Image (cartoon, rainbow, N blue to C red):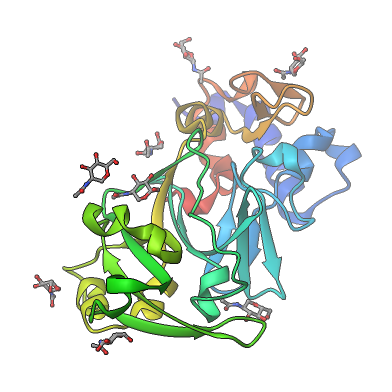
Length: 284
Ligand SMILES: *[C@@H]1O[C@H](CO)[C@@H](O)[C@H](O)[C@H]1NC(C)=O
Ligand SMILES: *[C@@H]1O[C@H](CO)[C@@H](O)[C@H](O)[C@H]1NC(C)=O
Ligand SMILES: *[C@@H]1O[C@H](CO)[C@@H](O)[C@H](O)[C@H]1NC(C)=O
Ligand SMILES: *[C@@H]1O[C@H](CO)[C@@H](O)[C@H](O)[C@H]1NC(C)=O
Ligand SMILES: *[C@@H]1O[C@H](CO)[C@@H](O)[C@H](O)[C@H]1NC(C)=O
Ligand SMILES: *[C@@H]1O[C@H](CO)[C@@H](O)[C@H](O)[C@H]1NC(C)=O
Ligand SMILES: *[C@@H]1O[C@H](CO)[C@@H](O)[C@H](O)[C@H]1NC(C)=O
Ligand SMILES: *[C@@H]1O[C@H](CO)[C@@H](O)[C@H](O)[C@H]1NC(C)=O
């Protein structure tokens, strides 16, 4: 296919590129409002950059640019948090291609005691699942009887009221201990990443008592968010989004939202090439 057989296509593509590059008012380009609104990725600080569907938030991307459950909050352009229910997590890394992210519980970053209102870690199992290298640490707080002098992995922490609480932790759930947890004020499980083959050895750190360091490194969750639909949409030069009324996946296109793909994107290698700047870079 030679370029000179398709002069109007070339012209159209060039105009389209100009529209993207120098941001001519969208009325001139006749660009769909939702498409224009979602044509900006989420970026916050050094760590989380160029995030597209299913992520949204921070007044940059409205919810229809992403998916419910994937709102990111940017704190002072430094770090991002995501909420699961009312539990807040620090987002340390997102790999959009692998559909994974590494998150850490915000409440445990400063002190294992934090507010004294510790809960089990709760992820939304419809959208997220634990990565293959995730294990649990069980934290035992203020135990009495024989559990109070177990003699390993002790820690102590201070509550916001200023009380000092001592406790201990074990890697993975020892069911013998879990069964006797009623002699403790509180027992919770916290996921961590088992990274024995990396320079950072979380297992070694846990054995050496460095539990907060390990929890700060977070744990991995895999997310489910229409990866296949989104890939198809992107290859038709669309932008992935969701239907404002039904929250179903939609492909946002220059003309209007479509259920799956943009109509004009198909069969035109030329446009695909010229439009390449429009495909989220973080996918590569
Ligand atoms: C995230 O950024 C906020 C605002 O700068 C800062 O107060 C907080 O300590 C940061 N948290 C982490 C875990 O880096
Ligand atoms: C998501 O889709 C892309 C493009 O088709 C593919 O390369 C990638 O492996 C997919 N990721 C997952 C986790 O399925
Ligand atoms: C860790 O604990 C959570 C909550 O109890 C559980 O859903 C998960 O399967 C546990 N993970 C492992 C690896 O045992
Ligand atoms: C852990 O704490 C218990 C009770 O306070 C104590 O008996 C034990 O010796 C401590 N173990 C270590 C290794 O500090
Ligand atoms: C712990 O309790 C559960 C349920 O009560 C029981 O099935 C299990 O065998 C107990 N485990 C141990 C090690 O006692
Ligand atoms: C990490 O710790 C585990 C358990 O102690 C050990 O088996 C493994 O060899 C360690 N890996 C490195 C790279 O130190
Ligand atoms: C969005 O949802 C509404 C209501 O369910 C539906 O009528 C409309 O066709 C959907 N739009 C797209 C682009 O799928
Ligand atoms: C492109 O066209 C081919 C053949 O007409 C069709 O099989 C394919 O599904 C279309 N792809 C998209 C993304 O619309």
